[in-house]
Length: 100
Image 1 (cartoon, rainbow, N blue to C red):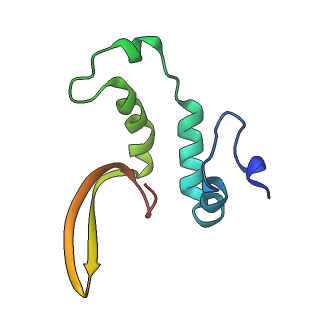
Image 2: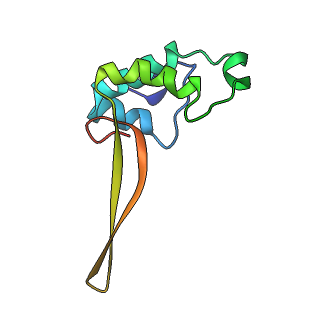
């Protein structure tokens, strides 16, 4: 199935993401497509002050959290000349089964 057939025309992919997700992570792919299709960005959301979190990510959280998408902290390891350096990176808002 060609990537164009995998995703609704309202959603645009980058670097074959839809093909990879649809084949290797079909449940997560469906979650993300459903979330993107149900989300509506309003002028009020754009104009409203965010504080610690605006209504926009709250809307995504209301859609994705019940489906098992969780916030997570990434940890990176760099090996240089056999010496390993670990570093906490940043938080990921939505992670499920290795998909972020």
